Amino acid sequence: MKKDLYTLTVRSSFAAAHRLREYEGNCERLHGHNWQIEATVESEALDDLGMAVDFRAMKGALHDVLSRLDHKFLNEIPPFDRQNPSSENIARYLFEEIEGKLPAPARLSRVTVWESDDARAEFSRRD
Image (cartoon, rainbow, N blue to C red; front, top):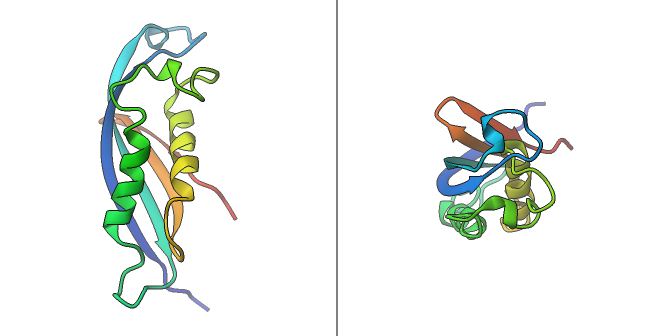
């Protein structure tokens, strides 16, 4: 039996500097990005208003987390003071920080981090 599935995505951005420790190449040196972030939720049901989740709630959750990173040196902010602030690690961090901020029945399905127009990393969890 097929199930209905609604998918919603919001996008935001933040600008920050970082360096990749022990990386052999230009990215080991201090540099910055204007990261584009997409957060995608899924829901099999709609509420009484006909919404899976209010876009305002999604944008608010994303903004709350991104405001901690915007215009910062990521290598000085936990957990990136211990782990490399790669796009993959940033995607996982954002997923974990946003995951509990969204109302049921919607659930966060993935976070996509674009570090440039042609390079992205995604993080999701399998059931």
